[in-house]
Image (cartoon, rainbow, N blue to C red; front, top):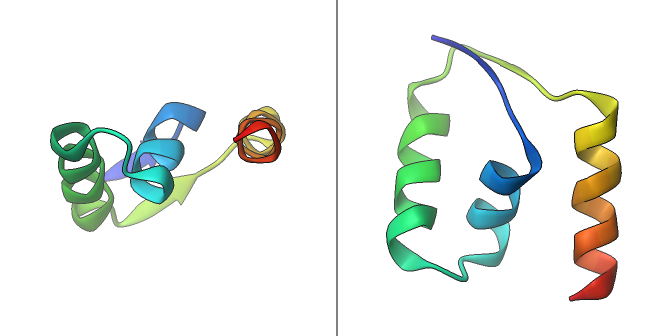
Length: 52
């Protein structure tokens, strides 16, 4: 499955702030055969991590 990620999926996986959503994000990533992560998603991801 090809997936274009958004920041919320990446953040849920890394931060694990919601157990159910983190598990769902990990399951989604495990099924992927190709991941596309747009540059703005990396920007938002880093911004949120710096603020956490």
